[in-house]
Image 1 (cartoon, rainbow, N blue to C red):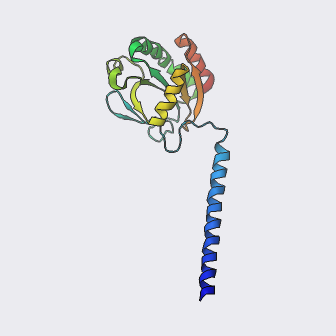
Image 2: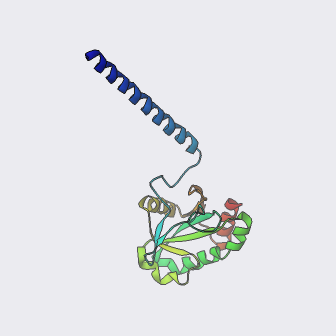
Image 3: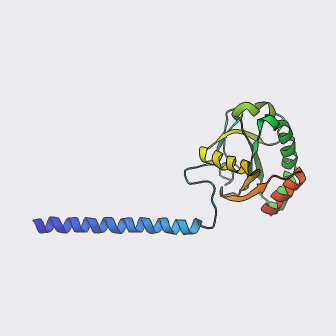
Length: 183
């Protein structure tokens, strides 16, 4: 009887060891595949946000959430103290969307994340882009770090960070930086 129980325990240990080896092998393969892709959104993060009116926003990058082709998303910070000028700047960049989209054949969305939550509401009606009050905490951290470097973030349709765009002096120069990346 002891021999049978011992054999069953050894078999169970072997099965568990093989199972864990296969799981680890799959995770190593996944890590190696993603190693060169510099993903900015972890599996448990998202590019979903809450706009200044409190509505849930989805990026629609994959085309699943919308009827549009998969596209790009530009995230940047709107600073409450200079929001009027920044809205004007990014409006000019967003107004170049037809030019950007004809070059890339994919939609380009612009989200301005307010550095003061819902206090950018007065600017939402004049903005030609979405003003977002809040994002997933991980993504807020990524955007805040980019803001410290005076950069906007450009994501591709997979939600992977495609480029960190230095904030240009003029909207035309910013549009040119985006255009270089989406071609």
